[in-house]
Amino acid sequence: AVVSTQSRSPSDTPKPANADADATKLHSQLSRILLLNARSISPAATSTVKWKIPFIQDHILDDLGRPPVPILAITESWLKPNISDAQIAIDGYNSLRADRHSRKGGGCVLCVDTTA
Image 1: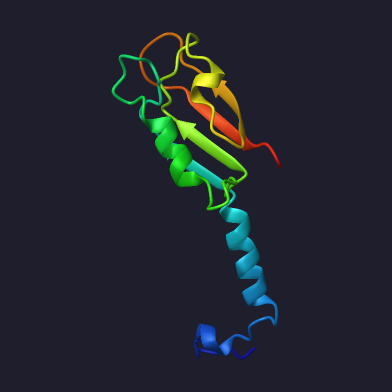
Image 2 (image 1 turned 180 degrees about the vertical axis):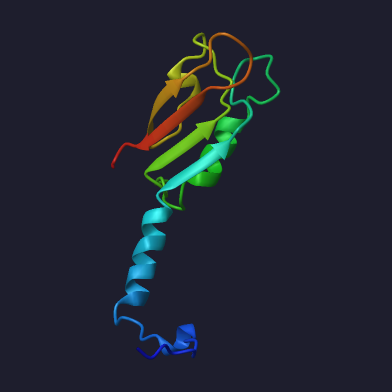
């Protein structure tokens, strides 16, 4: 058997006709989740971070007020059961929460586009 010692460069490999379309589709699928490590989104009156929910909302909605991603995941929410879902509501999203009850920190909020 003859073994070729020539290396092939990536440009030598033929590219499928739909490779660019596949790359665009993959990029579109990958940008369907936005992950934020918030380090507290508590809107408590004594909280210094009560502005975070309006800030997030102002920066994630597109020019027409629509959610740009179907899923928004917020880690380190630092929420407790005494904070209602209405206090952390983001327009265009339904929220699912997992608060940490035993100590400070932790918790997450998964916000799902209401039209998805």
